Amino acid sequence: MSKRKTYTDEFKTMIAELVLSGKAVKDVASEYSLSETAVRNWSKKKASINLEGNTTNLEEINGSKKENARVKGEIEIFKKAMAIFAIK
Image (cartoon, rainbow, N blue to C red; front, top):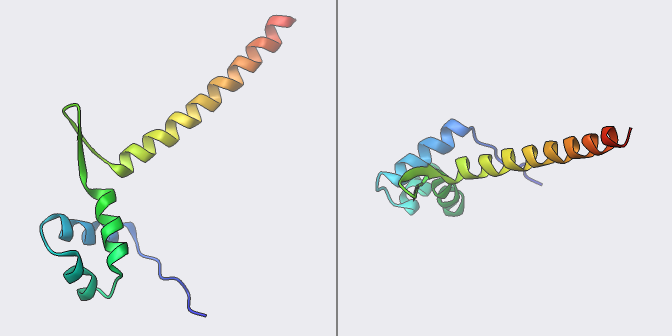
């Protein structure tokens, strides 16, 4: 049973930048002994997305979603606390 390889964020960013600069996914994958799927996924995460004049990427969007969920959870806690203190 083989162990799954892990790569640093810096390495993933470097590979994604190679693809985004115009190098073929297949070439990058074979050069670094990676699967094409991994290279493609890393590139998608780093690719910039233009939303209403602002440029972002999937990592920033996912980070914002996590932060939003955390804040919503905190708001719910505060609402429950307010309800408890309003009763007293």
